[in-house]
Length: 128
Image (tube, rainbow, N blue to C red; front, side, top):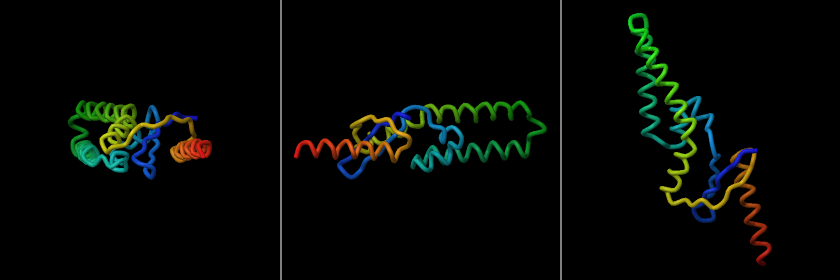
């Protein structure tokens, strides 16, 4: 079970964000950024990766050291996104007006939202 933070903006908008490391952000940072609607990060990463691979294809035999440097930068970027990705999603939600309302343990995002809704349903049932 993983820990999820539940953010809401009114009763209809509920979002669960996994607490901790983001494996999708680690393995495919540009696509992850686009999926999370972080357009500038996605565009910058795409340009960087295309430039890196273009450089590698054209100049790989002449500048082996630079290829090593680009590889190190690529791994560093992936690790940064893996460790900070979910935190950045939380900051984006707070900027959009969402509030942290609960923390739950669940298998995935959908189950975390369902657990929160069930908790709300039970609390409202007891009040009636």
